[in-house]
Image 1 (spheres, rainbow, N blue to C red):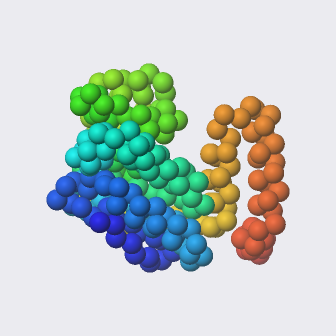
Image 2: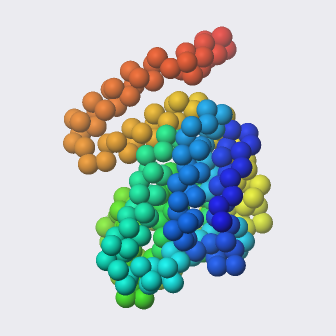
Length: 249
């Protein structure tokens, strides 16, 4: 249900359950965690790309599995924590994660996209948190949503459960790029190929710093930047980059 392949410094992870709109099972969550770990240990990998097989990115959690777990408090906690741990693993992953979203990204599927560092979407893509319509809540996903958009936007999405078009998602800062459907595959390849040419250590340090400053005071954030700046100066990528620059000058 999860496909993993590498090429050109990119780990390509595909949610592969198209007959169920790639709805996430506990087995898929475990497999996705394994794929993340595999990519983190591969020095040839500079970034990760997550896609969904078929027409949709991901319809969210497999509701039949969620309903079954609701019959037992311990099982419910295990299920919810498994999803939360997945999002944490994505946030803490040392390499950039790009989500390429086509079709629908709903509930936990929107969470996987939002937990990624960058989101590319087709013009026809839709994002949504429809849990309220089922008497449920986007509880774990809210952590990423609240960091991506302002409070009122997050509140409206959570309370209405209404889908969000890709252009609208871009307008409120939820995603990075909106790409015409016919050009999506080629543009995604162009985007990740360009990203993969950047310094792996610089991208990793930048990702770590940006998330590390969440909740910090201004002074603490500046100090975190100072420390990251010093750390970046001693990397081989920086030394090679400066040498190339000076030769061109």
